[in-house]
Amino acid sequence: MAEESDALEQVVVKLENEWLSPELVEHDRPTGLLYHYTDTAGFEGIIKNRCLWATDYRFLNDRREMVCGEDVFKEVADELSKDPALSSRQRVLLGEVVRCHDRFKLTRMFNPFIVSFSTKGNLLSQWRAYSADGAGFSLGFEASALPPPRTEGMPITLLAQCRYGMDWFRAAARSLLISLTERFVNEVSPVWQESEKNSK
Figure 1 (tube, one colour):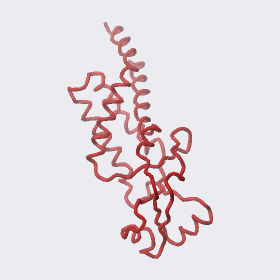
Figure 2 (cartoon, one colour):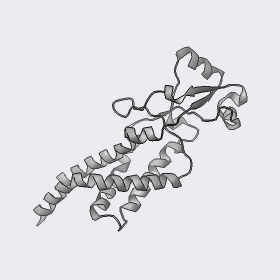
Figure 3 (cartoon, rainbow, N blue to C red):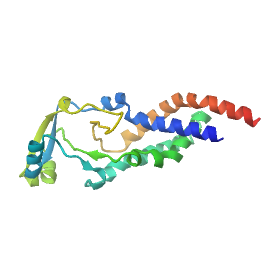
Figure 4 (cartoon, helix red, strand yellow):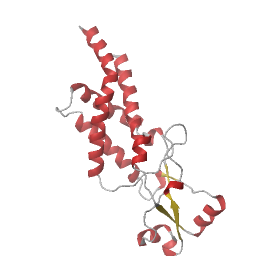
């Protein structure tokens, strides 16, 4: 049983890491000009230091923007773990995803820092919120000139679109979890078979 549990846990870690796969990240990478709104002090710092400062997600205006996706991911995994349309082994693996999720979720394994951009360079809400109520700057950056995704080693960096609303995310999580568990269940199968043989 210990060997089976260890194998399941290793697969769960691999499965969670798939969310940071270069292919998935690159697919969601925005293109064209991206705008960063800032005040005068921020502008001076960017020009002087030739870099953008990222903010710890725990100090964003709404830190839930970072963690709500993790919660939905766990909810979808829990729903799928009880779905009779999936194989029993997929359901076991999804149950392990739920059980281990709080230990391996992104904000537990890493401390994300965020730099925000907008595809709109003259957006009233952004001027008011981030550019000293219109007295600051909207700086345009070509997306292709920003750092490419780096999903191995530290620090991990990626540029991805921020999407609002949970319907699309629930659908994406469901599709990806089903696909990944179909693939990864094969890694655990030899362990399951050995466990079943020893229990007879």
